[in-house]
Amino acid sequence: MSPASTGASTTVGAVPSVPAAVPAVDSRLTPGGPGYRRMSFALFLAGVATFALLYSTQALLPLISDGYDVSASDASWTVAAATGGLALFVIPMSALSERFGRRTVMTASLAVAVTVGLLVPFAPSLGALIVLRGVQGAALAGLPASAQAYLAEEVRPKALVTAIGLFVAGNSVGGMSGRVITGWVAQEWGWRVAVGTIGVIAVGCAVAFRLLLPAPRHFKAGSLHPRRLLGTVRDHLADPLLRRLYAIGALFMTVFGGVYTVIGYRLTQEPFSLPQGVIGSIFLVYLVGTVSASTAGRLVGRLGRRGALYLAGGTTAGGLLLSLADSLPLVLLGLVLITAGFFAGHAVASSAVSKTATHGRAQASALYQSAYYVGSSAGSTVGALAFHAQGWSGTVGVGLLAILGVVTITVLGSMAARRTLLANAH
Image (tube, rainbow, N blue to C red):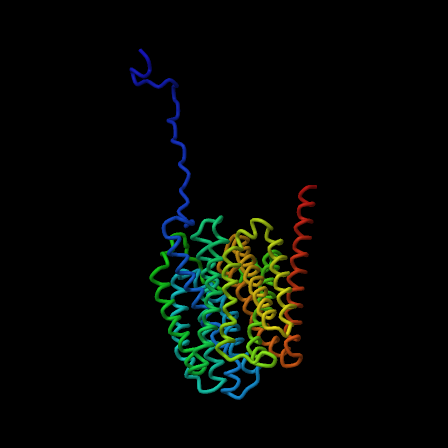
């Protein structure tokens, strides 16, 4: 009788067969999948609110100078204080997000920032306005690093550059809409009503963000132990690639912060003499940044990361040189190129940070954001000082030096990568 008919085993003492392991299904979000569109739109709105609030006074600096009877460099501190506050607090806020969750920290940050945004219009003096803007920037510090860490955890790696590009695109829309809206509102009702309007818009974005953002499914709470946090920060700073990416982000933002802090002053002067509403509309060129940021993934796919950074740097430098002309169409074309190059470079560098970090992603992103906003503060302050000393050519000179730094760092990175390949080959 066969074994099958008796139930006997064909092998004495055989170990029962173990079913083959079923590969785990990747439950992270992917384009076209459930929840991806809601997540993208929620973080897009968070990006809109962040940049609209962070730079709400930038297009209004000439009016703020007149209102408080201060210089351009003094008024520029209303921008530098906000970006400086963000740079200072982004690492502590990222640590809180490791412990309490990305969505929780982002929600709390937006809540505080929009509340302060509703108080900003009532600042009785420039000093009070600068303090409020510093608090607002510190509150917003919970957004950028936590958002990138959320995406790195919840989105499949192949879609990460595109997802971060959409968040950066939200930044560009927020920066654009904030400046355009404040320009026209301020022309009719003054700068205080203008920044108050941005505060109300940000409230709507914050509420929609909280309702739309899917609950995290892959977050694992970490420790708030200071020694462990410092160890993670040291690990990231010891990585040569991450250091280069941090420096690139800071240098790109030095250009952008300087140009857009000063451009309003230049366009109010001869030979342009534009009214505030028209100057605010100039910031519609941010739409170019929305496109360049959202297509950064395809750019990296075609040119590689370093190739994309060379292209972004060259585009930005070309825009700076064009902006020297006394022709409004050429100045506008220069701003288009500066904006496109900046947002592409920022999206490429920030997504590379998220991919490079193997642990402590929130801290890795926080260090990038800290460097990025230090660059913004430096750019707005140094750019304004250069404008005061040398006019627009001084601001352009600062920007070109920063782009030279981007190209130099990228070349050094290429050389380091080549040496590593040769060493591995031998």
